Image 1 (cartoon, rainbow, N blue to C red):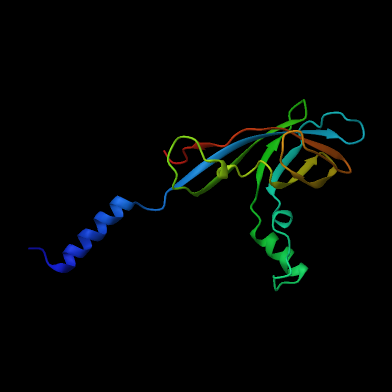
Image 2 (spheres, rainbow, N blue to C red; image 1 turned 60 degrees about the vertical axis):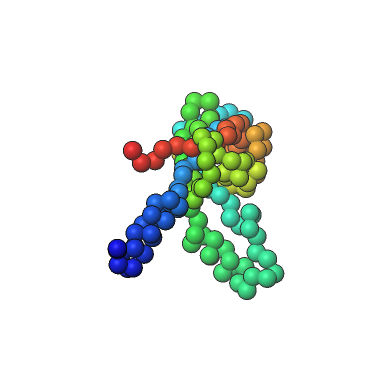
Length: 169
């Protein structure tokens, strides 16, 4: 007969094996943006483009929050993710892969609809090309959506469905 301490340890190990640890999966969602000069309409070639979730628009300051607007925006900046990056080609198009890793207990080869972290969500788009100052614009990510800034106009030309990708091999 096994001592009770050993038996409990064995049962715990078997339970952990059966239940498993928290599963983490990574989704990749390709996005294509088109950047043109706001004045001439010509494609902007070689521009650095960043796509960053717009926390301030998605979760605005509410009256229930005990923070001042300055504290709220400072907090958002402190937790802002670095974003996803791309460079425009000769047609002014930037292909950007939005990649998110999160807990995922679903099964199957396709992510469920709630794993679509891009479509319909507000994102900040930062554009920097040459000597022109960096410009930041906010847009709700939908194919065909467009935002015009002082120097650049950015159009969301395509958002693909998310798919699972392997991250550790």
